[in-house]
Image (cartoon, rainbow, N blue to C red):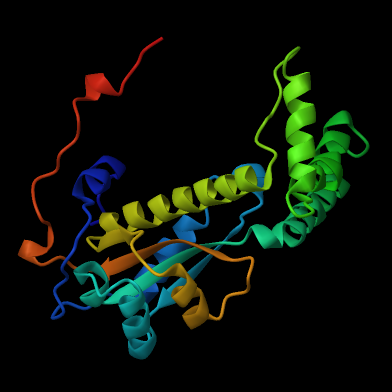
Length: 241
């Protein structure tokens, strides 16, 4: 029986050592990745990809790129979350095609809502993501900052800002995946400690792709969790206004 959301969140721990006598089903892992793809994402651009590593040779290469830390070396399988900010044009067009089809089959054709939605992907997204060596982003940042002196204004318009946006969305997807895995009794460990350049080479990724995180997957050994969970007191991070 699958765990409830609260049970899955409580069960999920960063497992460093996996039991290699207990295999996990790659098809179930794939189903959890389908849940990852349902995560919220900025402007619904879905600038992510998920590489599910089950090949032993590839897994060993990726493990070495993760410095053979136990969470990678003992993992049954690996999932690599990748950001693809470079695909923004393709993903924006996919959204645009979907919206045009939806509006053509509804009574909202030529409505204000339709015009706003279509212009969002035709004009606004290109204005945010189009870049020339970082120069356009800097100019946009200056202009938007000046406008922001007089009214609320979106300010995350530089190339570095858009990278952060892509990585935030990818991290939300990764959390969906890990909670889904916990719900079926599978364990995970998100790892940032890795040689991302080597991992990109192993996966044959293009220049514009970036590694968000590598996630070890398996079933925990008793000693796989290094200690009790520690969190600072909730009152230190919760602010009711």
